[in-house]
Amino acid sequence: MSPVQTMPPRGYHLSKDELGADILEVAMGPHHPSTHGVFRMDLKLDGETVVDLKPVFGYLHRNHEKIAEDISYPMSMPFTDRLDYLCGMTNNWAYALSAEKLIEIEVPERAEYLRVIVGELTRLVNHCLLIGFFINDLGALGTPLLYALREREKILDLFEVLSGARMMVNYIRFGGVRCDLPEGWLGECQRIVDAFPAFLDEYETLLTENEIIIARAQNVGVVTREEAIDFSLTGPMLRASGVNYDIRKVDRYGIYDRFDFKIPIGGHGDCYDRFMVRMLEMRESVKILKQAIRDLPDGNIMGKAPKIFRPAPGEAYGRIEAPKGELGFYLISDGTPIPYRFKVRPPSFVNLTALRHMCLGHKVADAVIILGSIDIVLGEVDR
Amino acid sequence: MSLLAKGILKGMAVTAKNFFQSYYRKERLPTVQYPEEKSTITPFTRNFPFLLYDGDDAVDGMRCTACTLCERACPPQCIYIIKDKDEKGKPILRPRIFDIDTSVCMSCQLCVEVCPYEAIRMDSAFELSNENRFEGLLINRGDLLKSNDYYHALNPVEARETDDRIAAKNALAEAKKKARQKKTRLAAAKAKRPPSRLKKSPPAREKPPQPEKSE
Image (cartoon, rainbow over all chains, first blue to last red; front, top):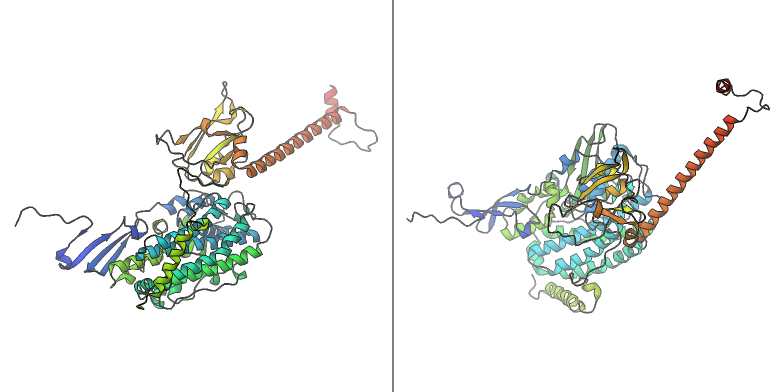
C-alpha cells in the first residue's frame, strides 16, 4: 500500500465507518446555481437517491431583527425591502400594517387601493420569476425564464416611476403611501395589466402541457393536506396541498373584502400543483388589479400619522398574504420610539422546513426542483 | 407521456414565434445594447442624495442649515455633519462639513422626507464607479452641492413644486413678519397716545406705568 493517500476531491467525502461504503455525503451549495442564493443542502446519497438531507442556512444573516431594535420604527422601513428582495412592496405593507395596529392609524381609502395595486403587481413579479426559475431548474435553461423576466421588467419600470427604485421601493408608510401616482402612471398600469393575460396564455401553452415538465414534476415532492398543516406551511405551498387558506380571504386586511376573486387550490400537493397554483394565482391577481384600477377613488394618500412615532406599551402582530405565504411582523413596544422586540415571520423560512420530508426517497435532480418549487429567497430565510 | 409529444411541439411553436418576432417587434426584444446605447431613466429614479443651493454662490446660497435631522433619520448612518462657525466662534446656520458615504448609503430617501428646508434631494446619476474605494466614495460638501437649475433639469415637475412650496413658505413668513412689525408699531403708538377719554374705565394696567414714565 502506498504511503501517500490520495485526498478526496473537494465538496464531498466518504464516511465509511458511520454509514457504510455505499452512502455518499455531498454538500450541495452554498454556491450552487440551483439553490437560489447562498444555501447549503447536506445530502446523504445512496446512489442517486436521497436518504437524508439537512438544510444549512445563515450565510446571508444580516442581523435584521436586532438592528431594528436599535433604531426607531420608521427607520426600519427601508430595511424591510431587503428581506424578500423580490417583493419589496409587500414587505413594506406587512410592516406598515403591524405598526398601524400598534398605534391605530386610519389609512385613507385611496392609499388602501394603491397598496392593493402595488401588492398585486408584486405578486405578478414574484410568480413570474419563480415559474421562470422553476423551469430553469428542470433543465430548460434560459428561454422560459427570459420570457418571464421580460414581463417582470415592465412592472419593475412601473415601480421605478412610482417609487424611484425598481426593487428597494420603500414606498409604503405608516398611515398611507409615500407619494401619489405620477401623471400617466395609471394608464400605463392599465395597459400592462390588460396585456398580461395574453402573456399568461402564451406561457401556459409553452409550459403546462409539456410532457417533460409533467413527467418531471408530477408526484414529486408530495406534501399531503395534513402534513402541510403540520409543517405550518402557508401561501401557494399550502394551497397546492388542498387547504383553502388565504389571508386575503381569512383576515380581509385592507380592503380585500371589496374584490371578487377566487383562490386556486391544488389536489395533489406535488411540484406540478405548486407550479400550477401560482400560474392560476397570477390570473386572479390580474382580476383584482382590474377592479382596483377601475374603482380607485380620489382623496388623501396619508392618514393622520404622528410626527414622532411613539406607541403606548403593547404588542401587535400584522400579517399579510405575501406572494410566498404569510408574512408577519410582531412588534412589542415599551413606550419608547424604539421597538423592544421586532420579530419577522418569514414565509419562505417556514416553508423550507418541509424540504427534508419532501426530498426523502427522490433523486438528486428532483431535490433541486423541489427546492425550486418552495420559492425561497435567502434574504428572508436568513434575515 | 404520449408518443407524439404534442405539448412539446406546441411549446416549440411558441418559442419559434418569439424568435422570429424578435426581429421586427419591439415588445418581443426590449433589450438595449448597454454601453453603446443607454435606456432612458425616469426623472423619479433615485440613487444618491445631493444638496441644493439657490443663486450663484454655492456656499452662500446653501439651503441646508445643519439641523442634523437627516443625520439622525438615516438608517445606515451614512451622513456626517459639523456646524459652521465664524471667526469669533459664533455658530452660522450652515454645515462646515457635510459628508455622505455612498458606499454605505442605501438610497432610501428618508433624508429627503425629513428635511424641512427642501435642501436635500435624490440624484439619478449612475455610472459612479471610482478607483479609490475610501476617499472616492466619500462625497464631501463641495461635490454634493448642486444648483437649483440642475434639479430643474433632473426632475422638472418636482422642482417646480418645491419652488412653489418654498415661495409660499417665504410669503407666509414675510406676511407674519409684517404682521408682527405692524403689531409692535401699533403697540408703540398706543403706548405713546394718551388714554382715550371716551372710555369709561381705562385699563387698570396702563395707569401705573404712566407716572413711572413721567418720573
